[in-house]
Length: 235
Image (cartoon, rainbow, N blue to C red):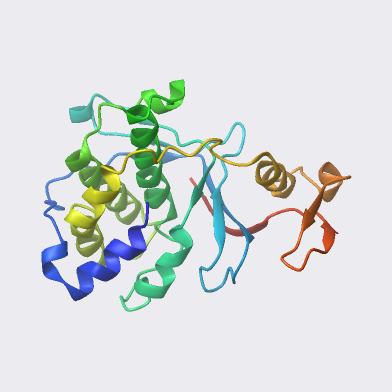
């Protein structure tokens, strides 16, 4: 799911946007923690390379929707994310923190991963929990989560960014990604990257990677090291 690509298109081409009534959506509740980790390739400061969303055992990021949605509970699993590319676009807005909206992006990315895996017949039980959310619902959900973060004080109130982002993910670019076939990643995360992520969590260490090596583009083999934590948001 490339929110940043849709966001950029929304800024340059109004027709790329759909419509989400940001004022009408109801806030939910976040709990747990968001850990976003940089894996490799590029610069974490610029949002380049591969990133992982990593749940913390016992502190998993959880979003509980309002009563009108039956109090639906959404709990993303570990997955690759490109939320790190948001800063490149988001810096043009006052109050738009590069990683402040990370919990909202992770929930939205998870809905896309789950949808693709349900459609491909490869969904886990956790992914099947959100299979009733359709494409318009995914855009409304992002608006919900952004509003929840704003009203809870986790991000600065901004009169532009939430509405632009919400509308961008309701447009045809996003819908094209939603309808993409064969997009379920198997495995969701490689065993090597999962090990690096767990080594970077509180209580983890490089000792967990003992004996693991990686091959650089030039063919050189080097010891694996823990992933780099680039964002933590806790509730």
